[in-house]
Structures are given as C-alpha cells and as structure tokens.
Length: 331
Image (cartoon, rainbow, N blue to C red; front, side):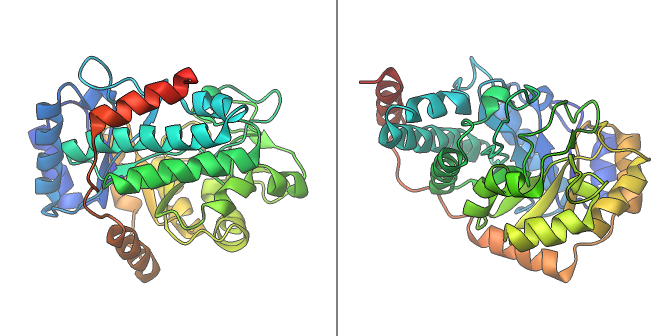
C-alpha cells in the first residue's frame, strides 16, 4: 500500500494507523507541502512511523498544472507539452531541455527526502481525447514521447530520484476523466500497440510504473488496473515492464465496488501495490484490511528499483536553469 496523509503534519491518529498498517510507502500532495522545512519534517515522520528509513515517498511533480510543490517556495516547472512543442523544430534541444528540467525537479525532491517522482507521463493523446492528460503529455507522436520520457527518467535518476512512468498501458484514447468515471476505449488492439503501448515498451526498464483505470474493449471488460489479462499479457508480457507496478489512486470513480474489493481485485490482477491518496483514515483502513504482504516477486522488483536509487551526481542548478531557459527560448 502507498498511502497519503491529510495535512502538512502527521496527526497522532495517522501515526498510530501507519505504525499498525505498515504501508509500503507514502505519497504527498499539495495539501501536504507548505515549506521545505515542513516537508522534510513530514517525510521524516512518515518514515519514522513505519520504522523504515528507506520507505518510498512519492509525489506527482510533473510540471505545469500537475505540481504538488508550488511557487514561491519551489520552481514552476514547464508542462511536458512545452518540450514536445520544442521537439517539433529542434529535437536535440528538446531532449536536453527535458533532461535538465527533470534534473532540476530531482534536486528539489531529493532535498526534501522524496524518493520517487510520478513522472514522466507517457500517454499519447488521441484526437478528441479528454484533456485530463492534455498538456501533461509530450505530444501525439509515440516516438517523441518515448525519447523525451527517457530524458526525464535520466534526469531524475541522475538527481537521486526514481522515475515512475504512467499511465500504463496508456491513457491517451480516454474520452473522459478517470477521476470521475471509467473511460472505455474501443480502439483496435493494433492501434493501441502502435500508439498507447509503444512509449511504455520503449521505457520498460523503468523502476516504477502506474496503471491506467481505463477499459480497453479489445482486451477486457475490466479497467486495466483490475484486469489480469491487461497486467499479465500486456503490461508484463507484450510491453515487457519488469518494475514495481502501482495502481493509480484506488479511490477514483473509474473503479466500482468498495475500496476493499478494489484493493483485492487490483492485487489479484497483478499489481504490486495499491495507492490510496485522499488521506482519509477510514478509507485507508478499508484498503489496509484487504491488502496482502508483498509477494516474493514484488519484493524482488522493489529491491531492483531500490538498487537504482543512487546518490545525486554533481550538479550546478544555477547553470542548468540558465541553460534550460535558453533552450526553451530557442536561443
């Protein structure tokens, strides 16, 4: 389980619950992040609660509209779309810019003790798709998405932060927001292979990935998160992803049934861990009561991911910022 918490400080009830439930790790949101000093203290208290200094702490710091760390305390990073726009006329500059931007994000996250960034987004938006992805995507060319996504992974890893690719096997054909309802994608399997699946296959060696709460009628009547066929045959099989597989937020309305039922179904389908993000203690209790210990295979994948969590390489943030600004300006 990966759990959220309610506010900027860990409440006594949350501490007791986490100590008893022993989640794998935690995920932070804007409600949890006020100042650098406060976030460092929160991260430390979360790890103290489960008595594991290496417990993963995740965040969605993509840039653009999905950023939990906001100005003036932290830098306003560009959305992925900006790098895709640059790639259309200067691919080399776009690749360098994406890597530098990710390295700057990693520097901020590492400073706070955050170990996993839920980025890059590898979804390939189809014409007419819902804008829940929109500017979060690098663009509509799977090859460019894969290239720029790889640069983000490189930049994050160089900064001592593990990347998490999302939303596998692809959210790009979704015509509605999975936070609110279940997207049903009727695209043929070959079209999915050529677009949605392709960037995830190209980055199949990523240490972490997050599932899509999307139904692909060519594969199953269940959302990918709950589908053994999608997880085993596509994500693990055809795409070849071998890292830690985390669900998107299990409380999203794309999924039906109680939280316990959803948790059991996701783990039975082959997800390694379930994310619950609202910070609601009662809901987390439902998830915890249905969850199981990590399988031996998941423990191996977790160890392999952790082995890639290296100290940051030497880095001049001011110089990198200046170079990034120059690249984005077209200089």
